[in-house]
Image 1 (cartoon, helix red, strand yellow):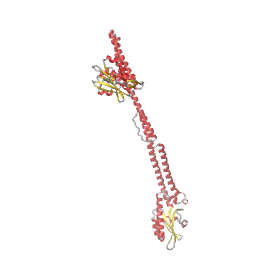
Image 2 (cartoon, rainbow, N blue to C red):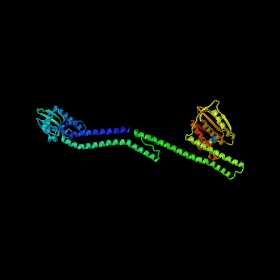
Image 3 (cartoon, protein in one colour):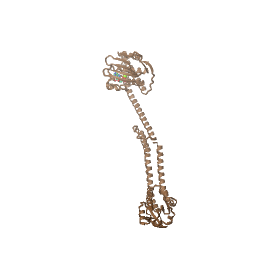
Image 4 (cartoon, rainbow, N blue to C red):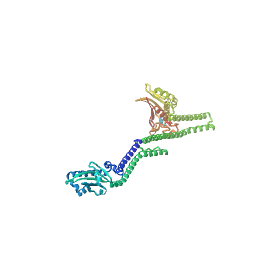
Length: 480
Ligand SMILES: Nc1ncnc2c1ncn2[C@@H]1O[C@H](COP(=O)(O)OP(=O)(O)O)[C@@H](O)[C@H]1O
Ligand SMILES: [Mg+2]
């Protein structure tokens, strides 16, 4: 429920409760405090606001019925004071009494009203009147009768107002206390529920904010409400998750950067150290023959080239990682394209005496690719085949095939293969399967990571199948 509605409901409930209690209290006061003669007793008593008034009415009716039946059966009973005393006692209500007038004189009068009753008060009360206030009494009703001896009489049922007033004064304190208790309780209960549904979640929200301030982004808000605070809590929760996510990404980037710096410095240190060594050798005159000098200079060039390619790899990888490398897609026939690619690296392959095999479909295989990037991926893979070959003659097979809606390019070698436990990691940057062996073989561990990034950008996939000492297949899967 919305807070606005909750508050409205609270307001209305308190208003209604107060209103009802005020009506009740004022009714009771009116009956007793105000000028008695002006108000009819029934108007005040008969509405049943109070249990004993209801009781009074029922009791009153019981006696009235009894008297009515007695008038028909045996009116002489009304002359019998013992009978009247009994009749009076049969009423369970306090401060009520009976008065009889026979032949214009008070014949019987209950003790409680004896003191302040006189005939005049009674005479002015007509049979069809009900509930009339007379000074200190209320006459509820009157019933006329004629005895067997033809005596005319009337019987009155009367309330002693003085005593009722006293009773009320005692009761009014109880009522006031009761009203106070009811109001306090209603208010208390409502306040409790409203505060529970408003204050509690706000406190929780405050706690959540405090936790974030402390840097704890794992604290989940415990708020389950559908009001405005619930909406705020939802937004807050989303904010927390986003913040957490962005901090995690930031942390990830930070770690990447550190790792990158560590790897770069490590990988660049080795060739620089040897370049320095060779240059010092030349400086110190160790390369004293033209042959030696050429060897030294060539080594320096090789190392420098290696550093250059390493830096290129790093540069490309970080650009791909940050999505800063633009891709230019164009439609090509893969059959022709692969041959062109491999022709370009043919020079390398020739040097290594590679047996190169092609297996492509007869029909053109059209794909939308970035030709430069895919060439880079293919080159990285072929380079690996060359780097990780065995003593046997290297055979590289390039197979292009369609598989459902994919075009799969397989580059297969008969090299040393990759250990099973290393397979899941070879596409991760800086990962090199056998670091101890591979220190002699240069590499950044970025070749396949770059190929994977390139494939990702093509919505394609890269995968591997390899067996140690048998060979490796790398698959590039493109969507047609
Ligand atoms: N054709 C292959 N034969 C054997 N091992 C391979 C082959 N291709 C990749 N690997 C393994 O996967 C690792 C990761 O390859 P790559 O990302 O190109 O890094 P790098 O070649 O710089 O080491 C290599 O270090 C190597 O251990
Ligand atoms: Mg490589």
